[in-house]
Length: 604
Image (cartoon, helix red, strand yellow):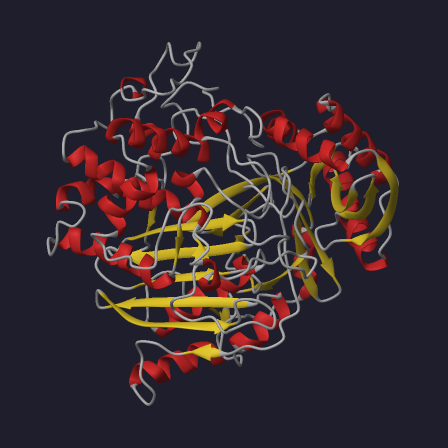
């Protein structure tokens, strides 16, 4: 289950959309394809459909306005070809419309494209996936430590996020800020705004997402070839795949800036100075379009089928998509509920959100937005396209609603715990049965029968299989999770706290200790000495890992001048506006029943 409250700095955006304009390409008016496009843009589907109920649909225009997303670009693959591409909305408020040629930052979708370059050099014998990367690194070496003595870091480990490498992601550098060299990024040296990229767990033992690993892969590619990374990527991948509108140049050359969508923040303003610069090219530096990402996907599809060996052979393409850790393959995530398997990757840079998914045989979609609010919209677009094209995955499921006596909910009321430690509470509100996974908003459940309940706001099913109600099974994202009922005392406290949290949300009143806890957290981060005992373990782990980045962000703001309560979010988090010496920022904090900090986020 996703976490509503992040344990790291949050970068959110939003804006008021003034107009939504559509710019056609590929599809022609009056064609069957055009009719498909019209159905998609006029009727975005909800996460779940209910048998016998009218389907609540909304237009793309309405959803862009509601979610404050200024511009969207979409490209659809069908039958192994780019069937249509279209832009919606505007590149900036008051500016020109988005077209299929509008450039967006691909963010982490840069990673699977970078992966192709690595595999291309593996094919040519210049690299080996299972060799110690220090044998390839020349201008910088990965420092040895107690973990690398047990197992070496390899390109396979870097590309599958299993090399034990630190640094999840990168915030980029605002316009006018000093830009570090790649060596400075690797070492976490000023003006780098991210910690040093190091090994802190035994390589090959566990999966942990690491943008830092792809920075090392970037250094390997440049050291082995002696070619600047943007040119290398053009020559090896972008050019052969005819990704005409794609570039790893950071910052974007001035002549291309007019073609780039402006990124927007949650306070309804454009990112100051425009797009952030990402010297971490391998994991985050690609500028592209959905049509070019579709060409990337089609290139893999054609390699798998043997139609083309540009840029990979069929054998290499197949090996790339073999799962290494759960659904993590080499550079991509793989999945599929039927014999048709897909590969995908998402991306999130400052002011941009994007997603690519494609089946191995044919079909797929790439969606890019210039808003940090783009994630929800992308999900709605993808599931509507999946429904339109009858994909076996991503389409909203159809559920059957049964008539159940609300009193039958009562034995299920209580608190349960996931293996991860997260708590979920269930209670009856009149004729309604609700749940809250702590850190998320309250969700109503609807009965399929006496034992199974589904949600409408997300595709999730809860099954109460036993008469004693000691366990509940959650089915979501092709995964089962069993939660166990808490004892009477602990369970009652958790349920009371959850319901009190909902009352605080309805009344918009702050938790008694949230302001004091937030002040202590900010002071601790600024001093580099946060009190980890005041945090739940997961939040403490992230703060330890990202402390240099968080400390730098807080320090830049200066001392706290004033703090004012703004309200309570749907997840129960208290929202404060804090005036610092050098600016203001919105902070959110969520406390556990025992007063420890469950999570916090802020916009620096």
